[in-house]
Length: 346
Image (cartoon, one colour):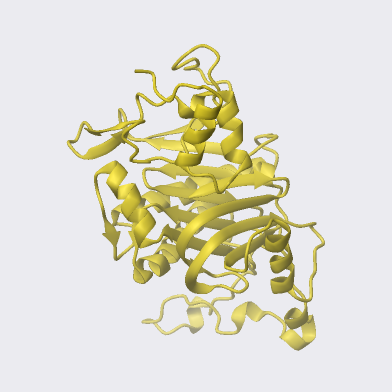
C-alpha cells in the first residue's frame, strides 16, 4: 500500500480486496481508494460521474472506491498500528437527527427503548430531491490491512469502525453517534501482495473475523476512536495544523500513541543531514535482504528489521518516493544507485 496527499485529495494505491459503503461501493477488487475534498456547498446530480473525473484527472483507472468530504486534507489524521493503517477526516456539521423514543409510560414493561421505524423522520426523496442531488460526506474512514481479510472480516470491520466512531463522539460529549453522510472503506492487500509482506515479516495470517475482541478489530477500534477525536480537534481549530497528522501506536513500554512531527525530539536518529520526510517506510516490511533482516521481537515473534537500511534517509530518495506513488522498493533502490547513494550503513 502506498498513499500520498496531492492538493485536496488523499490517494491510496495498491492491489486491494475492498468493501465500501460509499457511492459505487460494495465488495470488489480495486487499485485505488481516495478521499477528495469538495466545497462546503457542493451539490452534484451525478456523484459517481464526479468521482470518475477525479480518478481520471489523477491518471488512474475506473477500478477505485472514492469518497467526498468538505473537510480540508490538512485536517486528515493517519494512525498506524502494526499491520493496520487508518485514515480519518471528520466534521460534524450535519449530525444525525434526534431519534424519537416511545415514552416510558406508554412502553410495555418488556420493551426496551428503540429507535423510530420512520427512518429518523426524514422527509421523502420526492420532498427533498435527495435522489437527484448529493452532499459531501463528513466523517470518512478508510482502513487498510497488510494482512489478508476474508470478506466476512472486511464487512465486520465496518461495524467495528462504526462502533469506535460512536465511542469517540460520545467521549467528546456529543449527543449523536454519527452524521447523515458518514462512509467507511476497508481494504486489505490481495493474497499475493499480503504473502510478499508476510515473507518480509516472517509471518502470514488470514483474518476471518474483525470484531472488537480480535487482534485486527482491537487495533482498528483504537485507531478509529483516536483518529476521529484527533481529526475533529483539527477540523474545529482546537489543534491548528497546516498538513496531515501522522500517529504511531507503539507497544514498547506499554501501549503508547505518538504523533510524528518533522522536528522530532530524537533527530538525528541515524546520521547527520538525513531526511525525516519518510520517517516510517511505505515499503515496510519489504523483505529485501539487501536492506534488512528478520529478527525476533521481545515476545519471540518474527519481525522485519530495517536497522541497516539508509534508503529513505536521503533527501533525494525521500522526495522521489512520494512523487511516484506507484514506485516499488526496487525502483527506489535503482534511483539511489543512480545517484551514487549507499543503500545500507554496513
